[in-house]
Length: 163
Image (cartoon, rainbow, N blue to C red; front, side):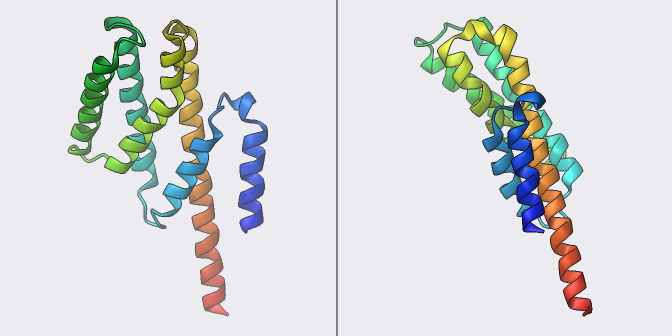
């Protein structure tokens, strides 16, 4: 079973360019994180929370690029906008979304898009949304692989327990 999961992850890495998911390390982080949720981990709510976290992070990056001074003279603005976007993610957790999913989506977006903003904010118009989509694909692939591994582990435990 471990070999199947490893092969699927390898296939994802090999075809990451076709999927628009250049940040395969996000899938690895998501995979490790989601397996810790256990078999009753509210995976749909987790996926939805993660995607909303991505949207909040993307909105924060675009606000930085449009409304505030560009790098390198923007450290204070980055701090304020990042703190506000994190606060929005925390507020959404109060309406029933998973805080861990919101934070991994928010952090995943910043990991994927912030280097683009820092190096050349003008490329956000053409590369910001595709990078966010790639981050979403990576995180969702990690979620699916994590769910797959959990299902394999539960099936294996049931088979061993029944023997």
